[in-house]
Length: 300
Image 1 (spheres, rainbow, N blue to C red):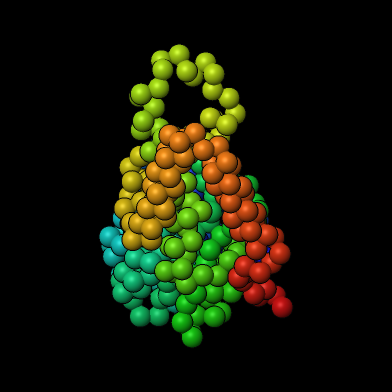
Image 2: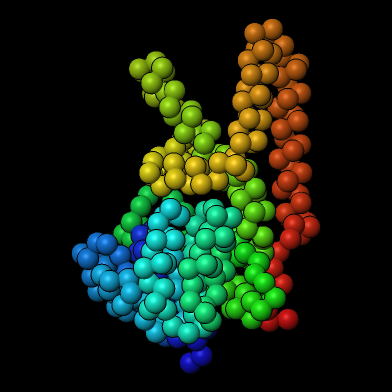
């Protein structure tokens, strides 16, 4: 049997890391899957369930001999973790991650690698407000957009392997420069979370019995407000430069809506809502028509 990688080391076996491990095993992408994490009980249970072949509590041992290392810890811990294992990395290893912010990582992580190792960023646009390997699923990446950051002139073969990896796990791969990824993710991922968090923050002012009236619209809008506070505050802070303009635009729009309501101007409000429909439909049509950038087929 031919494998894309011989040994994959996943550093961080939470929701994303665990889902990657499951999907790798199901798709037969690697001969061996090894994990590192801080919770020995969860790691042992994952091994017993066949999620991984083995695990280590020392990350340096987990990466030894791996030809692919995936960082699946919070973005603010990736650099220190990679620095810790750098001397144990194999010659020619490919290092990637699942972080939601790519610009800072593309600057810091490559400098920590030994000669012959290569970093290319990844960001599967998939997840849940739930945490932990116990909520992992091999189907998490099916049909999900997955960003792979563009590398230099000497990274084309490794980039093709990384593209093939995420496609094997069911992802729809998109190539982006790191900074462009952060600008786009700010609009379609980070801003919706920030707005949902802001709404949840003011719910203490809602009438005490109002939840009896909450329907599917309320549940859909507030689902992501249940996301992990520590993880998402770190993501938003990491991408604060790209988020500044989208947040300001939302603030201005809400201010204008408040003014339209104060005037009782239903016509202006209707036009604003219709304008939003058009903008949303235009973005959707750009993607569905295939005009958005996507990755080349490495099999072509």
